[in-house]
Structure formats: structure tokens, C-alpha cells
Length: 195
Image 1 (tube, rainbow, N blue to C red):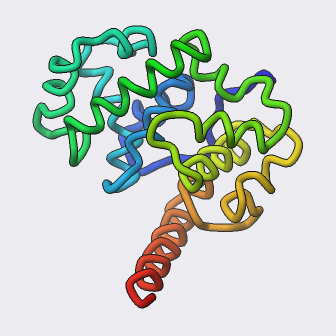
Image 2: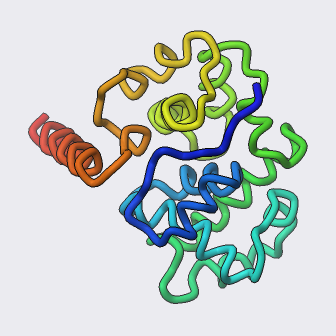
């Protein structure tokens, strides 16, 4: 399945970071990896900051083979790329190794030719650190914003795949939708605390 990289999501981050997400499937994948316990703006701008610190846009092969201690140093350099730079530098490296080992180092191969939505979510969930929820969110993001729509993708993405929902990064197209997603997340956190 050929994907046209034209992300409709316009996150409130520097335009160059959005452009990188639009043209580089690895950057998008790394944004999803980092989207954990930090604001989504930070998570999805960090691939751009990483590229700036390296002086070029890295490949999965490069990051997979990178000296782990040196990668941690790059992640930890102020301002850190993530709240947990050591753990997330390791996670990025693990994901890149999985992409190299299973998908020829090309992140687009993760979703290219997925027979159906279940297979898409299963492939994503096989990546280190991708549980069910994160896998469904990534599948919804790919389907809603990038046109990766194998049969049954909405069902496989669960509630995140619903049209007109405001549950995740997959639903952000402007400031209003960002506010709705934030309100939904706040409501879910409050419900979890009350349970």
C-alpha cells in the first residue's frame, strides 16, 4: 500500500518538525514511541530535535547501530528529548532494531501491504513499548491522517478509529480539535482516579 505523506495534523510545534513528520515515516514512528508521559507536542517535536543534534535525519539502521551511551547523551542534552532520556533512548534504539530486523530498516514497511486492520495493529504491537492502546492510536493516526486504510482498520483501531472522535493525536487537525483531545484525556484521567 503506497502512502502519500501529507499529514493533516498540524501540531503546535515548529513548522520544520511538522514537515519532518509529514515526509519521514521513521520520524512519525519515533514520535509515537516518545508519546508517553510527556506532552504530545514534545514527543512529536523530538524527532526533529534529534535530527538537529545529529546534524542530519537519521535512518533506522543508524539509530539501531548507534553507541547506546552516546545516544543517551544526545537524548539527555538540555532540553532533554524526553522526561526519561535514558529509557527512551533505549526504546528508540530497540524500535529501530526491530524495524531493521523485520522491515528492512524502512518504517513504511511496518504498514505497507498489511492485509487488514488486525494485521496492522498486530505489526505495530510487536514493536517494543507498543501496547494495545498505543498500537490502536498509531493505526488510527495512520488511517485518519496518512491514508493507510487496509480493510477493517477503523475496527482494529477501536474507539480511536471512530470518525468524528477526539481521543488522540490521530484526531488533531487544528487548535480546536487539540483542545477537544486534551479535554477527553483530562476526563479519562479523572475517571481513572475516581475508579
